[in-house]
Image 1 (tube, rainbow, N blue to C red):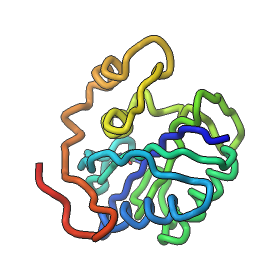
Image 2 (cartoon, helix red, strand yellow):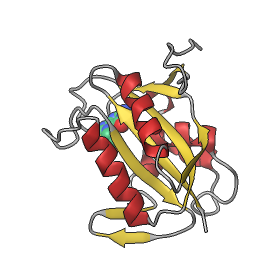
Image 3 (cartoon, helix red, strand yellow):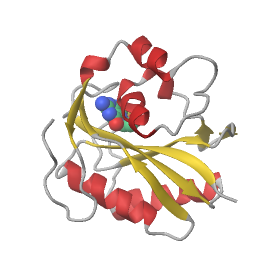
Image 4 (cartoon, rainbow, N blue to C red):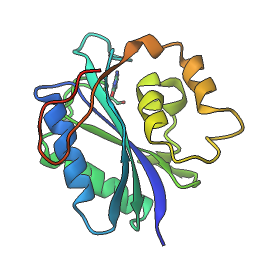
Amino acid sequence: MTVLCYLALGSNVGAREQYLREAIQALTATPGIRLIAVSKVYETDPVGYVDQDAFLNMAIAIETELSPTELLEHALSVEQTLGRVRLIRWGPRVIDIDIILYGNEQIDLPNLQIPHPAMKERAFVLVPLRDVWQGGTFLDTESMEEYIHRTGDEKGVRIWGTLDLDTGSAPTES
Ligand code: GSY
Protein backbone atom coordinates (compact mmCIF):
# COMPACT_ATOMS: atom_id res chain seq x y z
CA MET A 1 0.00 0.00 0.00
CA THR A 2 1.32 3.45 -0.83
CA VAL A 3 0.48 6.72 0.88
CA LEU A 4 0.58 10.20 -0.64
CA CYS A 5 2.80 12.48 1.45
CA TYR A 6 3.97 16.05 1.30
CA LEU A 7 7.42 17.17 2.43
CA ALA A 8 8.72 20.72 2.93
CA LEU A 9 12.38 21.52 2.36
CA GLY A 10 14.45 24.57 3.23
CA SER A 11 18.05 25.74 3.13
CA ASN A 12 19.71 29.04 4.02
CA VAL A 13 23.42 28.22 4.09
CA GLY A 14 25.93 27.97 1.25
CA ALA A 15 24.86 26.45 -2.08
CA ARG A 16 21.19 26.45 -1.12
CA GLU A 17 19.77 25.13 -4.40
CA GLN A 18 22.37 22.37 -4.52
CA TYR A 19 21.37 21.20 -1.03
CA LEU A 20 17.72 21.14 -2.08
CA ARG A 21 18.54 19.18 -5.24
CA GLU A 22 20.70 16.64 -3.41
CA ALA A 23 18.10 16.25 -0.67
CA ILE A 24 15.35 15.43 -3.17
CA GLN A 25 17.60 13.06 -5.09
CA ALA A 26 18.63 11.25 -1.88
CA LEU A 27 15.09 11.16 -0.50
CA THR A 28 13.69 9.59 -3.64
CA ALA A 29 16.60 7.27 -4.46
CA THR A 30 15.41 4.77 -1.88
CA PRO A 31 13.04 1.88 -2.68
CA GLY A 32 9.56 2.61 -1.42
CA ILE A 33 9.51 6.31 -2.36
CA ARG A 34 8.29 7.66 -5.69
CA LEU A 35 8.48 11.33 -6.58
CA ILE A 36 5.11 12.68 -7.73
CA ALA A 37 5.57 16.46 -7.96
CA VAL A 38 8.13 19.19 -7.28
CA SER A 39 7.21 22.79 -6.48
CA LYS A 40 8.90 25.91 -7.70
CA VAL A 41 11.73 27.20 -5.51
CA TYR A 42 10.90 30.25 -3.40
CA GLU A 43 13.21 32.68 -1.66
CA THR A 44 11.70 33.46 1.72
CA ASP A 45 12.34 35.86 4.57
CA PRO A 46 13.41 34.03 7.74
CA VAL A 47 10.60 33.44 10.21
CA GLY A 48 11.18 32.96 13.94
CA TYR A 49 14.84 33.72 14.38
CA VAL A 50 15.01 36.57 11.88
CA ASP A 51 18.70 37.50 12.17
CA GLN A 52 19.79 35.01 9.52
CA ASP A 53 20.00 34.78 5.74
CA ALA A 54 17.02 34.26 3.44
CA PHE A 55 15.89 30.67 2.85
CA LEU A 56 15.15 28.78 -0.30
CA ASN A 57 12.02 26.75 0.37
CA MET A 58 10.13 24.22 -1.68
CA ALA A 59 7.77 21.25 -1.36
CA ILE A 60 7.49 17.82 -2.91
CA ALA A 61 4.70 15.26 -3.15
CA ILE A 62 5.74 11.61 -2.87
CA GLU A 63 4.10 8.23 -2.75
CA THR A 64 5.63 5.97 -0.18
CA GLU A 65 5.44 2.48 1.24
CA LEU A 66 7.43 3.61 4.29
CA SER A 67 5.69 4.07 7.61
CA PRO A 68 5.70 7.61 9.07
CA THR A 69 8.52 6.68 11.45
CA GLU A 70 10.57 5.06 8.68
CA LEU A 71 10.04 8.14 6.52
CA LEU A 72 11.16 10.40 9.39
CA GLU A 73 14.29 8.29 9.93
CA HIS A 74 15.07 8.45 6.22
CA ALA A 75 14.61 12.24 6.15
CA LEU A 76 16.85 12.68 9.20
CA SER A 77 19.54 10.50 7.66
CA VAL A 78 19.43 12.59 4.45
CA GLU A 79 19.76 15.76 6.55
CA GLN A 80 22.78 14.31 8.32
CA THR A 81 24.39 13.06 5.11
CA LEU A 82 24.14 16.57 3.67
CA GLY A 83 25.86 17.94 6.74
CA ARG A 84 23.12 19.45 8.79
CA VAL A 85 24.41 20.55 12.18
CA ARG A 86 22.00 21.92 14.75
CA LEU A 87 23.89 24.87 16.24
CA ILE A 88 21.09 27.31 17.06
CA ARG A 89 17.48 26.26 17.52
CA TRP A 90 15.50 27.91 14.66
CA GLY A 91 18.87 29.02 13.27
CA PRO A 92 20.70 28.60 9.94
CA ARG A 93 20.72 25.15 8.37
CA VAL A 94 22.07 23.59 5.18
CA ILE A 95 18.92 21.53 4.84
CA ASP A 96 15.68 21.07 6.70
CA ILE A 97 13.20 18.36 5.71
CA ASP A 98 9.77 18.27 7.34
CA ILE A 99 6.99 15.75 6.80
CA ILE A 100 3.96 17.99 6.39
CA LEU A 101 1.21 15.50 5.63
CA TYR A 102 1.13 11.69 5.52
CA GLY A 103 -2.09 10.75 3.79
CA ASN A 104 -4.93 11.77 6.10
CA GLU A 105 -3.18 10.44 9.17
CA GLN A 106 -2.89 12.32 12.43
CA ILE A 107 0.27 11.37 14.28
CA ASP A 108 1.27 12.67 17.68
CA LEU A 109 4.57 11.16 18.78
CA PRO A 110 7.24 13.00 20.82
CA ASN A 111 9.43 13.39 17.72
CA LEU A 112 6.79 13.48 14.98
CA GLN A 113 3.57 15.45 14.69
CA ILE A 114 1.56 15.19 11.49
CA PRO A 115 -0.01 17.33 10.15
CA HIS A 116 2.99 19.49 10.92
CA PRO A 117 1.77 21.74 13.76
CA ALA A 118 3.15 25.02 12.37
CA MET A 119 2.26 24.54 8.70
CA LYS A 120 -0.92 26.61 8.88
CA GLU A 121 0.96 29.71 10.02
CA ARG A 122 3.81 29.49 7.53
CA ALA A 123 3.51 30.97 4.06
CA PHE A 124 6.96 29.49 3.26
CA VAL A 125 5.38 26.04 3.68
CA LEU A 126 1.90 26.66 2.23
CA VAL A 127 2.87 28.54 -0.95
CA PRO A 128 5.18 25.75 -2.24
CA LEU A 129 2.68 23.16 -1.03
CA ARG A 130 0.01 24.73 -3.25
CA ASP A 131 2.22 23.98 -6.30
CA VAL A 132 2.30 20.23 -5.64
CA TRP A 133 -1.12 19.75 -4.07
CA GLN A 134 -2.83 16.76 -5.67
CA GLY A 135 -6.36 17.75 -4.63
CA GLY A 136 -8.64 16.58 -1.89
CA THR A 137 -9.61 18.23 1.35
CA PHE A 138 -6.94 20.42 2.86
CA LEU A 139 -6.86 19.93 6.64
CA ASP A 140 -10.55 20.73 7.09
CA THR A 141 -13.17 22.64 5.20
CA GLU A 142 -11.14 25.79 4.58
CA SER A 143 -9.25 26.16 1.33
CA MET A 144 -5.49 26.34 1.09
CA GLU A 145 -5.91 29.84 -0.39
CA GLU A 146 -7.65 30.94 2.77
CA TYR A 147 -4.85 29.57 4.92
CA ILE A 148 -2.23 31.29 2.76
CA HIS A 149 -4.10 34.57 2.96
CA ARG A 150 -4.35 34.29 6.74
CA THR A 151 -0.58 33.94 7.20
CA GLY A 152 -0.34 37.59 6.09
CA ASP A 153 3.12 36.74 4.82
CA GLU A 154 2.75 36.15 1.08
CA LYS A 155 5.15 39.01 0.34
CA GLY A 156 7.85 37.20 2.29
CA VAL A 157 7.71 34.32 -0.24
CA ARG A 158 9.05 35.15 -3.71
CA ILE A 159 9.47 32.85 -6.71
CA TRP A 160 13.18 32.18 -7.17
CA GLY A 161 13.14 29.63 -9.98
CA THR A 162 12.79 25.96 -10.71
CA LEU A 163 15.09 23.11 -9.79
CA ASP A 164 16.42 20.91 -12.56
CA LEU A 165 16.83 17.60 -10.79
CA ASP A 166 18.53 15.79 -13.68
CA THR A 167 21.23 18.12 -14.88
CA GLY A 168 21.90 20.36 -11.93
CA SER A 169 21.71 23.38 -14.22
CA ALA A 170 20.91 26.86 -12.96
CA PRO A 171 17.32 27.67 -12.06
CA THR A 172 15.12 29.62 -14.42
CA GLU A 173 14.23 33.19 -13.54
CA SER A 174 10.56 34.01 -13.15
O1 GSY B 1 11.02 25.39 9.84
C1 GSY B 1 11.97 25.28 8.91
C2 GSY B 1 13.16 26.14 9.14
N1 GSY B 1 12.84 27.57 9.15
C3 GSY B 1 12.54 28.38 8.11
C4 GSY B 1 12.39 28.14 6.73
O2 GSY B 1 12.54 27.02 6.20
N2 GSY B 1 12.06 29.24 5.97
C5 GSY B 1 11.89 30.49 6.51
N3 GSY B 1 11.59 31.49 5.70
N4 GSY B 1 12.03 30.72 7.83
C6 GSY B 1 12.34 29.67 8.62
N5 GSY B 1 12.52 29.65 9.95
C7 GSY B 1 12.82 28.38 10.25
S1 GSY B 1 13.13 27.83 11.85
